[in-house]
Image (cartoon, rainbow, N blue to C red; front, side, top):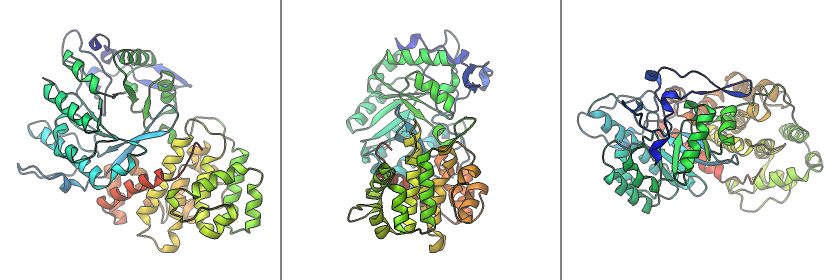
Length: 485
């Protein structure tokens, strides 16, 4: 029985990294344990109430007042909220999906709480439908966290369920109607996942319909987490998602314990190393970037590629991706310069910098996130800046992750590159014409609503335009052929 094992919450210890080890520390008082996104699967205590105070799916942020006056507001009217994303990685380090999010305030207790939650859920689903998020589903799984009552919304009946994973917490009480609805949703192509799971026997008929179980690894020490994973695996062929994973140390623990998927931006931060050295292949790409920035002769550029044909192969693979929109394939580096020109060639060389060197478990995810951030920065600023200034937007976005790529401070990472002052000012001091759009793109990654609203107002960009640009950037990044980098 699934209910015989998870007695961890009252004894759970958060995972902390110190001196490259995982140390179990004393837990906070029970009344302070309030999971934000999801808590581990756990059983009822022998007596007393189950400790589970989180409203579902409660990501706490600010939310504008929504006057309902007793009448249900159409979800489309709430599109002034900002759509965010969190990447979900597999064991190979590849981004296999995104959770699309709209942060909200925790609804006040009372009769209107469930209504408000369902409105927010429909706002999220409506945004996904209107913004053509389904175009991502050929390559990626799209996760959406909603409340159990929202499983009945008509939005799900209109949408194509293929590639969409609905995460929810099972409601208290009888589950017959929920199980029937889940069966219908699976027949429509949706996949289902559970979080904040409180076991009871009624769940035995729901679990066979579930593909994913999401747990919070920060609430347990490594030993408890390992026991939890073993028990989950013994009761079904679930894919276990660890969330949040925001440090390399916690990722290493979850990976060693054979969890399947990892949600968070741990890969986008510099590794905790004492010294970093740029390898020879990346140094060669940096030299190519500087030569291209200075409009060097093609003969000189081709000379730099000759010692390493792999670089030429990767560059041509990127350039010939559908994202470029070329009608005829580019056959050589010299051909690329003729067809594209120096500035477009430079932007593809920036991606080559990420693809070169010795790959590790973060390489693919870091490249993909850099592409999305670069394209989003570009889309946000291209209607606001003068044409002669627009080329720097993409470069600013992609190089904003250079410190994570090279594991060194940004100023050190940029020292070998000859960048325009405006790009360098945005990357090192968050100043200048490119900084507002870079900050806006970064804030979109976590749906930091208040921060996004501030930058959006300063830039004169509407929430609808930001959401549209965000999804377009995700779709564009999927069109770039990264291979296995």
